Image (tube, rainbow, N blue to C red; front, side, top):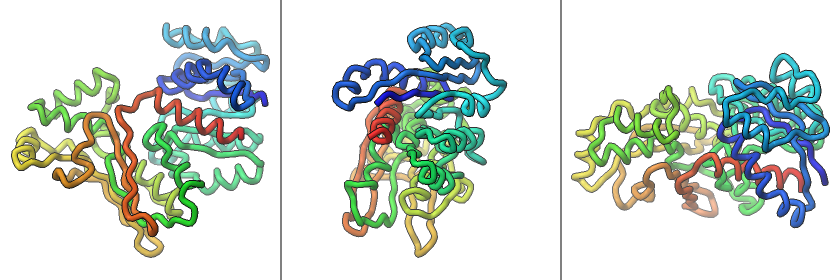
Length: 340
């Protein structure tokens, strides 16, 4: 089957997705019977392009890498904004990878609703819409006989949400804990070598792990919205990052990190959630962990989550050294599963 792919967001993840799709083109056709073309790409700062007959994806990548507008690739006039872009684009699949809004999920939420209303599969790495619109988006997808998929929103390409769709039938999730923010884990790992918090943040920024404004990571909000997404989807109880009320790592000193190391322990930003009747108790805060904890060995940018189920008391998943490419794989896997 041939699919027309529309992308909103063409930063590191969006570009990695296009490169992965191009690399896997022959394999997807041979093994899955899937062919595709890119009919629309909308960027945050470098214009939009629409071509019902298929855009030159290689040229789009080259223009983006050069910091130039992709609008020259468009065969039709481009709309004034991203929502009109989604509504105007011919397509069967939307990949929504715009920046996260932890407070409302917008404008990604409206992008996804517009796509689903048209009968397009909607796939995202954006955590905001999952937290703020999961039930509405799921119902809209069912109503229009398409899929809403979001594997890459937590732990990139690791199969977290899909793990609970089929491999764990009739299993009830009681709670989970882990390390879900790679940036803070890298900073804490660097501080164990004697770097100050500020030095470790600058290093994380230099390698592209931390943003210019690292507050979403170091203050715990990225981890909190991931906790909210897991709780909302996997335990069926809506939760917002504001309800998690995270505590970040900026208050930790080199002396505290060194003192823990002398005791044979390590500081980690630990996420926790547990079901209590019809509600969830959740937290994100720094904790000292010892060698008896699986969290102790999670280094650098790696992540870990351990689930407690009524049938499996401890089921853990580790992701080592994720990046845009692993996030892109999660999006690709969603595409394959949606198109199946």
